[in-house]
Image (cartoon, rainbow, N blue to C red; front, side, top):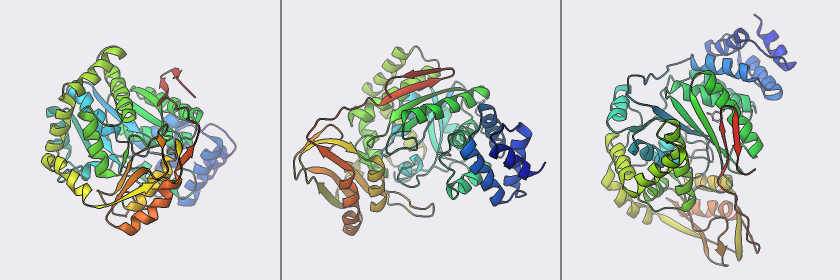
Length: 442
Ligand code: URA
């Protein structure tokens, strides 16, 4: 088979068969296909798309390029969750203990943050002593004893995706729905869970800018999952402003801790409970109302908080430091950003807030950058709030006042203030299951 012919077939908008897709993916991974041909192939896919069948072949081939986690020896239904990434999205930290407290196992492999969005692994590592790089046996052991465990992706999980994603990143081919769907699903399928909940973010701070695009991506991922015999649900949730009030690794741990204690920002609590109840529902824990009640009760009774603490201890984290760390945050450079206008907050550009947080040291511009676990932002105002001139919009935390001054303008420019009270869209925009789309708001 000639690679040239496969590229030309896709360029002309034709459907590729399994052996043609295997030829390209395997050839690129084993080095027989050079970057320039793979780049041409990816651009052809970007421009002409791929059918569900092609995406399934693509996913299957990437999936078989590395290790696949076998969780079958662990009793009960195992669920996993993936978010397409957003600013202030710390829902995994809240949902995993809620779901585990309700008796369903959460086996989660997470990534590090890059660019304006944070990674769950970086957030957890901001807890003194917390280990994310566990041996398989230890991961299984915690899963059995505690019911939830969050680790970093192992080096050999879908190596094909790693290599292809790096090329997409420099060839303007990341923003392709078939490529995103195959990339995410290959990693989720390799993680070995029985049920997968996908949280597809939509809005200014997300990959998908419109609900239509987010639903299209959701449907494709659900269909790919189904063809591998997995139960997959995708929910489309808003990312028009940061989720919750805290952005930055340790600040987000503290906020998650607050939500598990029954406090914390309402939007974060609501979306976390919604996602957790969907996971319980998929795992067969009752009808949706029963699952919602179970999730709520796990917070009210303190059982979810207990699970969170158990997971942190099992993974080496220092729980007592978690309460004391409030002091650490307080004694850093703390820089208040004041509003120069009065009115209602009508918009907070999440990607801009993410960028400001990155400047403060909370995120990475390139993979090799180190991060400051205590840097970040706490919002004092959210969309819909009233603000007076000179009132605090948010507080920046960093090791260095110069970084705060650099981040201040980006942060302040992310706010839109007007004298008209805005309409606040509900967080959950749509839910996609196999063959069904429930749209709540577009
Ligand atoms: N996240 C992924 O894992 N893959 C993509 O292609 C895009 C976002």
